[in-house]
Image (cartoon, rainbow, N blue to C red; front, top):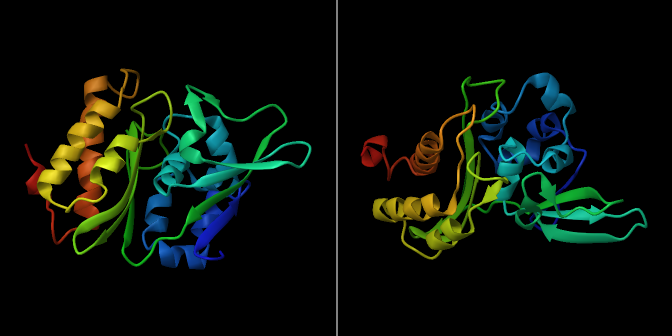
Length: 232
């Protein structure tokens, strides 16, 4: 951690993040979020870099770090390094911007300020030890009820782990309100393209995407929004 930015080696495990005292102070619900990820044995072994290059459209930690607007540094066999945004890494289903002889070296993200809130949500057939049907994360910064910055990601609704460019842009610079969230969901629905599979129909995944998006605001702004506000 340096200059308000955190750098994680690509070989870092979920358990190492879980046990990091300082990062837990920046993300008060970190352990609650990470408990939804796989099993303890896999959290002890699996690396973030491995999660990224597995390129699953529902990779929990990929969705997590997309919402943090993370960058990744990539190293080739000659020692040359380049840095790109994680949201630009994925090109299509199971395809990504990693050339032969290259490895992900680091994950870099800006630490949240006192005005920034972060949340991760996941729906699966079992609460724990299961693959997501749909998962989503958000990082949102507000001042005087105005959204200064927003980054929203979602998995299970596209061929790639999806950073929601249009939805994030739509939220930014506007006053936070119920109407804004409802309008942002309409943008989100146009930005995703779920398919029917063993984890649910496309209509079901759209419903989950909507509900998880609403859940972010109920969780992060409980004095402002209640579940009943979103019942349609």
